[in-house]
Image: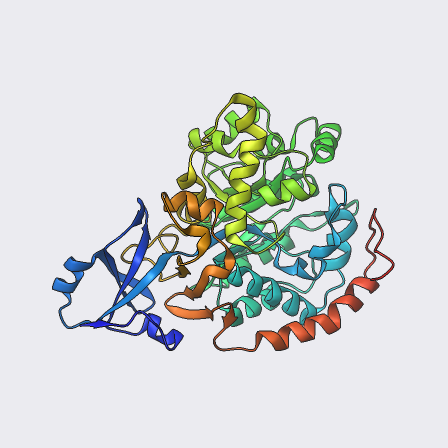
Length: 462
């Protein structure tokens, strides 16, 4: 028995004991027609040719979703959820804005403000098609519980880092205390349906070698991700050379913190030697093309890294929570920086960037067994995307279309762990507009009071 493709309520999308039959299904091998999906207990219970599933489940009605694509939710492998109040402050600013903007701003957040800025960022990510975000660690002194509360209420999956550096303002902090808190964080989220713990040392130079090694080892033993920013800006590379005699990625390697559990954000300025170190270490990279365009000195050699077998996923760096624009920027930046100079008009094709935003990103975060694909046993984290738009007609290659032509406003539903979290851009179970009003009333005061230094001052009309 077939039911109409028109949904009168979002709950119908995940109703039990029905087969979903979208026009297109994005499988690990690419987009396919004629497929069906069965969802049960928050997971994909079965996936395959619709006719096969109908024979297998004869009592299940079929809900046909005409002109719709059902695809895995996107995964942001590098975010800063506690920075949403200031994301519009940094346009046109020189590199290393973390010193002039982010440290002062995040240091001004109390628990309530940390919760609000994180909830706003998580909501924006969900609206942009992300069902998972990886938070790189806040500089707020209020801890991460407020961030966890925010992501739970929004309903987005989150890899949540605790910062663990022991060098601060010329002082060496007690490493034993930092490591004890790190161990506690790693064990605090056991069996949490949405939060996966992680540890971070934001840049190698703000930790002693012993702490870098110890924090990485904690992650290795726990099977969790160790996060750091490396080789993002020329000034950071030169400062590392001056202070330590090695470049940032080499610094991690020398300290014993470069290995399969390391997730390195940016990695834009790598020498051939560093690329070999990276490949041999098994470490992963978060490719952040929008960050390169807005405040960087270079574009990571993402296609080359992929060809060398280096695990790589896409990240926003908190710039904008829009997954389809991230795909477009990932491909375009790679083409401008590395494809055009050698006459490469393909740059890997559309599938490589789509994979980096979904299944490859899940592997990078250690969540490959949980999410990132439409396949049996994986969490039902997915998007329903309307393909009946003029931008996609006629469509000759849906994979390329998703990279270059698709838009956020085509996302009809965002589903995380089998629950519809967003329907046509808005939450189904909490008041996002009330949050926006609250943030609008508070954010300007927070920014005005924080000791932020902008090279380019605010416009006089602000």
